[in-house]
Image (cartoon, rainbow, N blue to C red; front, side, top):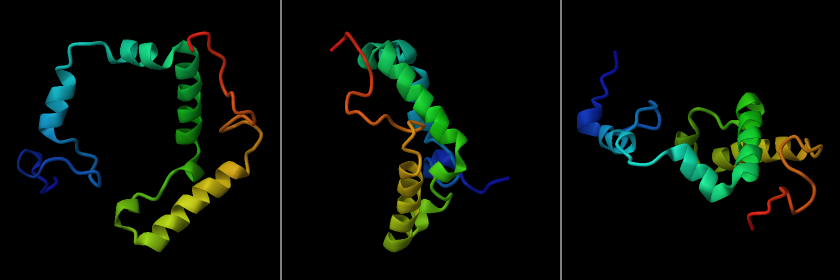
Length: 108
């Protein structure tokens, strides 16, 4: 049992707790979040972004350490550099494509 009282203290990134007021507001939205995402990004780009997000989340080398909010400046830069270095080792298209036009869309 945690001694963290979200009603009094709000959310906590470290504990993975969303502020109850924010969560209540998110739950009460009057629109479909998925439909809005598709409207803003377009179907093609949204599919591409979701694929890349899933690839990032599946790779433990793409994550910052759990305590990254508590790291000093140098430790934080080292952690980010490790992620950047890992991305640069996968120029095969796992995380990005070589060209600047990285998705095709007729919605532009």
